[in-house]
Amino acid sequence: MTDFSLIETLRWQPDEGFIRLRLHLARLSRSARRLGFPQPIDATTKLDETVAEATAPLRVRLTLDPQGRIAVTSASFVPLAPETVWAVRIARTRLDSSDPLLRVKTTRRAVYESARAEYAQAEADEVILLNERGEVCEGTITSIFLDDGSGILRTPPISCGLLAGVLRTELICGRKARVGRLTPADLDAGRLYVGNSLRGLIRANLIRS
Image 1 (cartoon, helix red, strand yellow):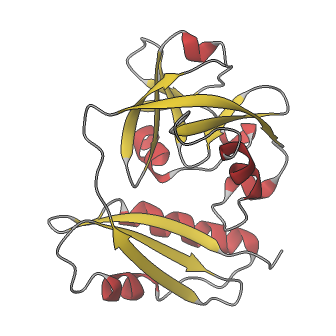
Image 2: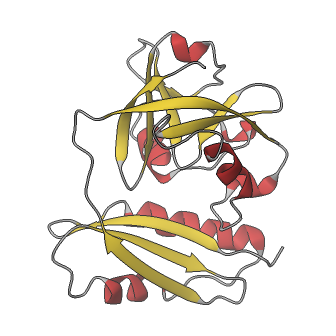
């Protein structure tokens, strides 16, 4: 497995620096260890160099290849308005919960791209993928969260076949979310959210087609 790189996508704010940096670096290091990649010892230095002269919010993308080479790129970033609601749909594309690469963030994204391509941008802001058992896993770029009225968000377990998202990890560690299996029917029985570390938690409206 050497035909892909690990990825971390971070948000940088002029008044805050990198958002959730510790969690991003911890995931990158853990993923590198799991796959036998060299440890990303220069990651922090390269990130800091990239934003050294920045004065506005940035989307920063770091990749680590099997030889340990780190590349960092950045682009301007406009945060979503707090009242934003995304339209989401469920993909026909299925994830295989036994695939170990679903648990790490890599440049191997064919299955997510296939799911996203099922709907035009005007039809869906995000697309949810299920596994071979019909359980809710994740979006193409987000983790899934359900407010079921318990006061704590519910999010699918890693064993369903999904990425340990950085925002997801933060919410679980902060006891704002708990792990629990979700079916498509469950998504109609509460308030749905999607989210990632770049954009935060986003209210979502599931559209059945």
